[in-house]
Length: 217
Image (cartoon, rainbow, N blue to C red):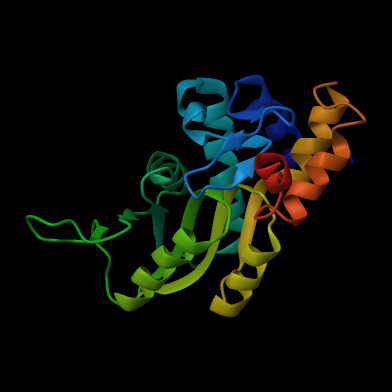
């Protein structure tokens, strides 16, 4: 793959600012309980002006090219709110964001901002893992009468379960970078050794059972 491609450029920048950490020998534990050799925190992008600007420009460029008819940009709370705002600003579009659930006070809104009926919406997400929370936001927007044209995310792990869920929901997903590009870049930088590559490949194919024998052993 060409090192100048957007996915590899962004992968290199995410590694450079510590937004992605790789620890095959000392796995992280996700909130779901999954053991993982990788941890991605795209909130760190917001602390680096250069990477923040790059991501905002690329999100806006991809969303505009894929969905020129979009009238509204929607971010998925909370991780994609800031990234969605920055992209919407560059696109010159109104912005709303979707909460995981309605707030329990005030207007009890789940969608914050002005969302006209039958609005054409492009959704901005920061990270896609299993796809459940991302597609829950899509369901909320559709329930409010919006037409969701598609979703653009910063990063995806590329799990089969996520691909299946997006297909079933009839939602197109495009990303700026992904797990494959990240591992290629990390390998090129010498951050991943030849002996670790199989471990990283095995995890992506079967994250639920990965490392379970080690834990139970």
